[in-house]
Length: 233
Image 1 (cartoon, rainbow, N blue to C red):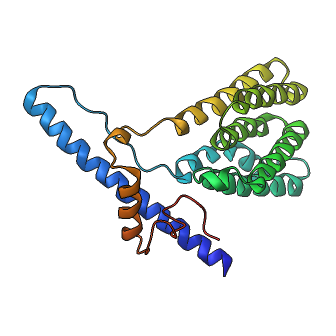
Image 2: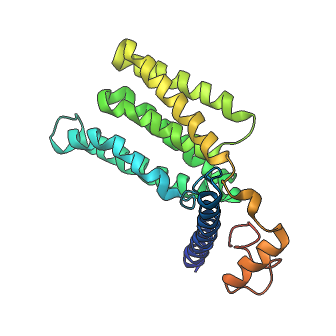
């Protein structure tokens, strides 16, 4: 089945990313040991492999809205609960696709972002308060997906939209929502676009793909969809 092949492909990609990270850690430990021995500059420590899990903790920004739903402080709670569920589901869908180039640039990912934008505007305008924090979350998802010259224009447009919608409920505090939305969009994109600390220590692309394909149990880098960078079909 298609979804089982997709899960298998994603698991292989995560295992390969973790193996690459372990290799980077070994290089870091060797470089740090040499720096301590010679009194040189300590190298930068490589972080964990980049995956969508890194962006999931930001969903806690929606805990205020969830708490209001549980305490019965939200009018039409079923509408709010449905909006919260759909937004969180789409957020998870988008941020995990953001780390695979072909999936990040797919039309379905952009459509999911558009639906998230519509839901955010509806919840923010309808409820206000803690529901306004979904705009920075939308900025995080947007920054994770978009690259290139459209990023800055989209970030400004999204911040302006957040300020306009938030102004209905928050007055002058809408400036803070707009600023937070723009900041979350641009900072997330900058972090995810930056090279990893030990990128210059990596082997040539051909040998790297060959080693990765052998580790994943694939026969050839040319036919391995996991190793060649294209999504599994």
